[in-house]
Length: 161
Image (cartoon, rainbow, N blue to C red):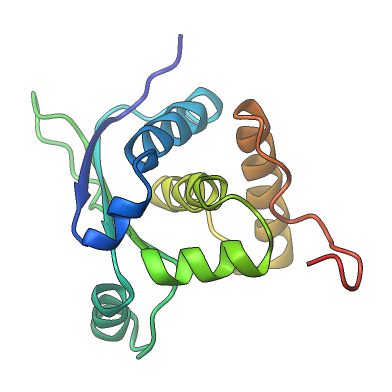
């Protein structure tokens, strides 16, 4: 049995009403990720929009544009008797939907991928170097395969997407 974090999902944009399976998808993605990389504690996932993500990206990263997912790992201090706080994952609806359409993949599959990607960032994984990116992408592929989701990094033939 693996240890999975407690997940607080906040739907912060009515755009997500178009995806009634989003909550289940987030929980399944985190559960599958925790089977591969266990983490006890608590985390939040905010399902929001491009405007909110753009503001966070600008204020915290100095990049004044929306992105698909942001991760904010919590500090590593541990107070006795209090569950560890892993951090927050924030997903922008419009960017996610546009990317899913461009790549001809189901939006909930893309959501699962971004949530897994964000979860791994909370645990310290990164993709700043080629070797880090390769390790993180391999882990993502394996986790998504548990959910019967195709390889999100697969190369597409010209004209295929």
